[in-house]
Image 1 (tube, protein in one colour):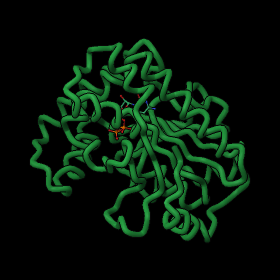
Image 2 (tube, helix red, strand yellow):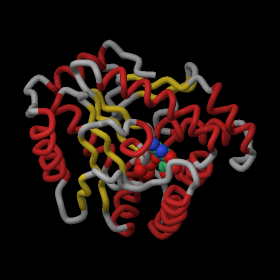
Image 3 (tube, helix red, strand yellow):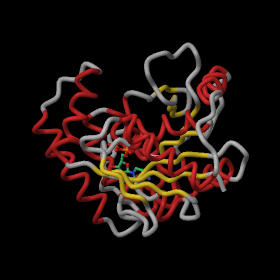
Image 4 (tube, protein in one colour):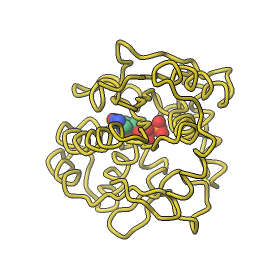
Length: 254
Ligand code: CDP
């Protein structure tokens, strides 16, 4: 199976690194966090409380979440286009307000059951195909795709992760405070690590990589070296073109 599972806490670098690894190997990149974020955004939009477990669970089962490679008309740095029905929610699901409730939503067992099932199907379909898949999240190596031959767990101190998220949001023009982001992240890490179903933790056979003090490229290269050992494949020169041509067709992943 050509599958790489990348897990780790908030802003540990999973999506930046995972996306680049996917491009280098010509593997499909799939960020599972966007699905939890889409449900969190939808309940907020509809005025539903994140603690109303039954309604939130039903929302996860019924919400028409679409994830597709961005088309060439969307050159705003997005890794994927996320839709709820026809509505493009790619950037709105990344707001600090969604950050504040998403972990409560993700701790709901009905939500996890609905989303994990979809994610596993995507992982199995693409991981058993020729192209391969890089899946990122909190429980990919432990629950979603435990049979992935290469598992990575990314780490970084919380102060560094909060700083990264602060820069990311500031660059998108959000008026945010570092101290608030740090506090929100502490709460989110705690809920993610202590929930009863699929808590955040490294799989037993995961390679743990510290991203603090390393450049993005250095982390990507470490993973590519491991991938070469496990899959016997190195970076493909056509990886980038593959992704963008896939993008221009707007291929639907979910
Ligand atoms: O980008 P960041 O690391 O801050 O978060 P994310 O990967 O977009 O995930 C947002 C939230 O979704 C996490 O805090 C988890 O509560 C939840 N999540 C999860 O429970 N399981 C996953 N496989 C992915 C995300």
